[in-house]
Image 1: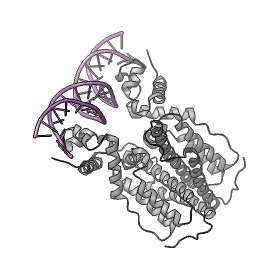
Image 2: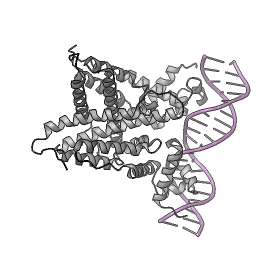
Image 3: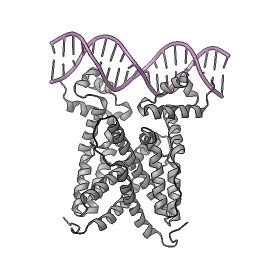
Image 4: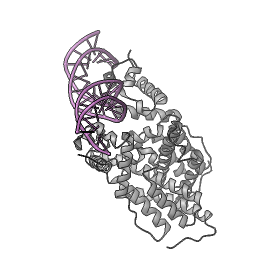
Length: 195
Length: 195
DNA sequence: ACCTGAACACCGTTCAAGT
DNA sequence: ACCTGAACACCGTTCAAGT
């Protein structure tokens, strides 16, 4: 049959979409590809690495932040798109969180945030701190929101986290405000950019 | 042998401490208690519920925030203690994150934050938003930090997240600054408390 | 109330061997 | 290069039955 690495990732992402992370086993992926489980180990050293590739693909597919003229809007656009990409698949946030401390998968959002913040006048260290803080908030919130969403969908609990989407923006605004005050103190030579 | 629910939780927490979350299986807990695996289902309906109890115990043991006179310091004390409690056990953050969207386990930190923020003059909704935002940041950061720490301990990667502890305080300061600006706009009738 | 015995339907991973 | 066959050492969970 001669499957490539990408076929395996695509297949795994399809299984994630249909059955969730709990049912995403090496044996199920192999069965879906009509192959013995051991064949997968020709393409990936272990399951962790395979899941890492699935997380990367998930973000590559869903992470497309809208361009923005102003830095605050740019930061919000990155965070929103990062969140939307994870929400597009069941257990998407858990997958991204699980995989190697999301060091690899979230590279693009991280780099984009650092670029936006640097353009806004933050120095390298302040931009790095602000970027990781924003991503930690987004991941934490999305993890929480998605498990609550899925619990509600399974009919478990009425609603504990409640009002999911609006609260994300409210919390994000809080962190952005904090970054804004860091900007005020860090920006000295460079004025805020418009373009 | 007549074990109680609490014995099972204590045993599970000991196994977590020694071997990590990956080796915390129902069968291993049962073996440690010198009991058949099925006996555990007399005390807990499933593994998820057992892990929830372990997370609760972990936080009950490690979460003891220092009292503070000023609200910013009070917020920092809660967040630090929440983080320290999770860092005290291998995979502590992952456990807390996994368990029911940390809706139950993090009740005490959440309530404490809301109380501190309400005393600082935030209205109910602003306090709720700020509290969840802070906890999401802390969980996201600690999750990231702990997996990086453990990867480094296992000799996998030199260091990608780097400078773990100081960055936590820097990011926390950022979010606290954001909460501060929310406080400025929300506080109208009540002045900031000193006690 | 607390537990055993026995089973069911699964896991991730390794490794010699095939083409 | 890509895969099979077969095994190893595990999983969570159920359920009748024992005391």
